[in-house]
Length: 65
Figure 1 (cartoon, helix red, strand yellow):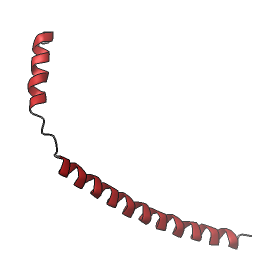
Figure 2 (figure 1 turned 180 degrees about the vertical axis):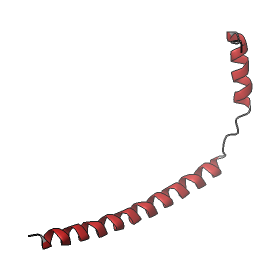
Figure 3 (figure 1 turned 120 degrees about the vertical axis):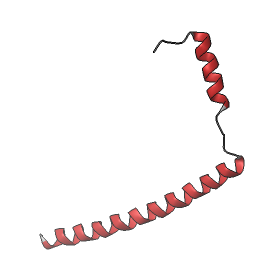
């Protein structure tokens, strides 16, 4: 495949850039809120899992003393 000239490349980039569909402000806001909710839920879940395993390890190490 032959390499396009710089002019052809720039024209192809402009053509492809015109095909981009940008999200609306409302869609961006909804997605941001969804990400924040999921991040909060997952952080609480992993906090619980970590605390649970910390209790188990603390209990096991107390048995070894």
